[in-house]
Figure 1 (cartoon, rainbow, N blue to C red):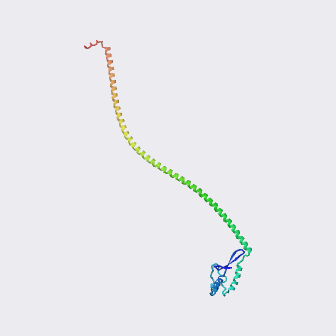
Figure 2: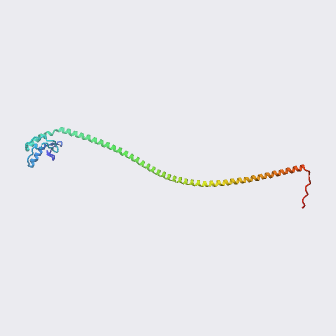
Figure 3: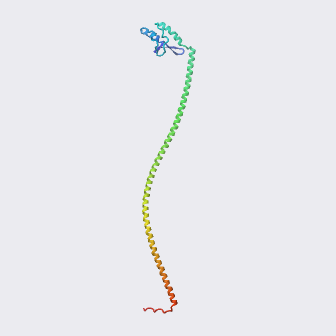
Length: 240
């Protein structure tokens, strides 16, 4: 039996090595402490209503007389005997129960660790799968970025080509317009020339027809005259 700093007696049973704490009344501890210090004992009645660090209100607060060392030890014996409640068999049963509870707690802890390990493995597997998906998505996004950049370059080139085509079309329209005007004017001149030539040709053909008609008329007239008029001698030939 030994006294701790928190004013509790610790009783060690060497057979089971199981300590029991016995709470000492506050007034007994203070009284013994003052006796060791050589000071006057303090009546417990003056300390009525106070609390210790590890015990509740003292049940002996009404006892006021001064107690000697022998009497204090005599008062402590019933408290110690009342505190130790377990026999050896009960202690063994309690220890067995503690061991069983320890084994159960150990098994539960092992199951919890196994469950934690399985959850960790599942989480790691899902993490690896997510990382693979993320890498695939990153590769796909990189390809999409490259394709987008190529499409933008093509769009810029197509815009440049469209602008060039518009400029060329405007220039071609201008050139075609001028050429069309020139061709129209040339066609009008050719038409006028053809019409003039055709008029002249028609006049020439008309004149030829008129000359032919006149020659035929003269021939018919001479024929008629030769038929109705007597024959005349031909004129003499001209002298040479």
